[in-house]
Length: 296
Image 1 (tube, rainbow, N blue to C red):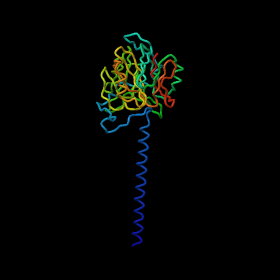
Image 2: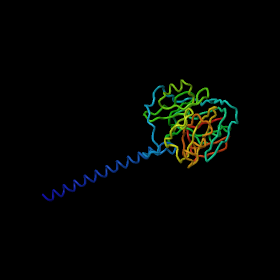
Image 3: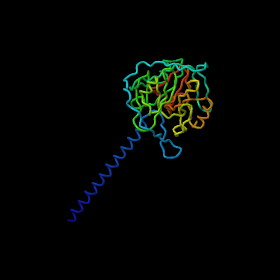
Image 4: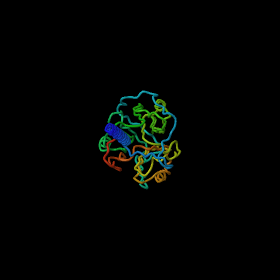
């Protein structure tokens, strides 16, 4: 009888060990999956935290998705004229305080991504196509598939809709008449296109919207960041902050520009800017990205 009890004890112990090993392996696998998920997109995304000054997703109403069918391809990218109320130099360097700022006056604007396939190009390739232009990376993308992320319109056609859910998303939209506006995910794509939306650029939060500074959600921090903006005269701005520039310094540096809209775009290692074929800000790893904004 004692032998049988001893045998049962070892069987029971073996089952417990198997349970621990299997359970531990499962949780380890989940941890790896979670970490891989966090690395999917191209930019150094803000770390979500519960502290008061940390990044907190802005919760809003349910995203307005499915209002219009997606297109497989928007066709050859078309230029959109963005007229200004004043005549100035085409490109003006207003950089200050570790913030690269270029004002672009009366440009024609082109968006490079036209579909959801892998359309990544290096800056050198884009410069070869458009040597006499200001070129900056724009929307975020999936590093594994190369697919552009976020709300995407080109040539007035919907390439990618808002993501379902209640987290507020934003897009900088250039209309057919050259006017610019920031929309959020409560507005359906059909309305944006009906209102003239020709190009949409998406990644992060609205910094300034309709002339009003928006509450900081902490996503603009010490990392490298890039922004697209327009002012009261409808000049466009390409803005890139250096490492450790910080939110307060960025806002101080643009405070006299009378910006109407300013949107955070894909940042981190994707950040890169060239003007008339000259590299002004180089990607940290010569990163190829699918979506550039080109202004000439």
